[in-house]
Image (cartoon, rainbow, N blue to C red):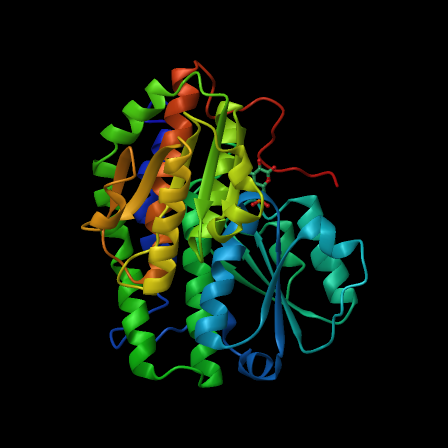
Length: 369
Ligand code: BG6
């Protein structure tokens, strides 16, 4: 039931802190050791693999794209992220040392199910990340790591997305421990960062006024661009997808570094551009490069809405609006920066009088290929 909320989506976004907290529950102990009980007995497999392929569709694929940064950094295993329907219809190199991780909220998406079956038949080992107990994809996989976001009713995914990133991060830390790729101390530090996320998401959700107002002002907008770099890149893609799905607005996400290689030609006076700004406390060069991108598009008249960490003053001179997110480790920013983008798409769709729970032409789980 919707409770007092205007839509299932509004309710589900409000449940994001809980979705992350419940996904962590029982997987991090008092000493900060990360152990996913469902992966018990797979140590040999994790020691043996030389490559991970993540397969998914839609929002789940962007969760996978965020997860790649964490798996490579922590577990030190190379990761490719592929759309399920593209993976299956070519001749991917799969060996018994390939681990295929599928991500699906419903666990029923036919494109992903067929890709998992194909991967198994080709000799890969398979782990699924799924939000629905007993769904088909986990049944077809060697192991499953459930996200505990609770039932997601709105067609476009929100709380499942943050739960999927959480599950991928836990998986990355689990594999890093098994492979000895990180010290127990570093694993505990990262686990503590993850455990701090629910309260930080709650803080972001308390500051929704600016983004909701912005959505109302922008109800007539015809095109919106999203830029991000590093883990902010898949978040820019997800922000654009949400706006397409919910508000039927032409939206595109780009890697900020790619701007000069094409997309900057799209910038004309008044063009709204959301920029997911990496923390200045992380890689300095990435932060300053994104700030330069903001200056470049500002000079061409773009209207800039920056999603930036508290206290990042470098964005102030060029951004028209700044949406603040609490401080978090660089890899954890996506769990915070995606929230205002979800709220923006939902508020803009509502301002247009659209049904945010049931967008036209879309279905919650697509059971045809
Ligand atoms: C699409 C939904 O059809 O399927 C998206 O509209 C979703 O919201 C995608 O991200 C993948 O779904 P699932 O259940 O496999 O995560």
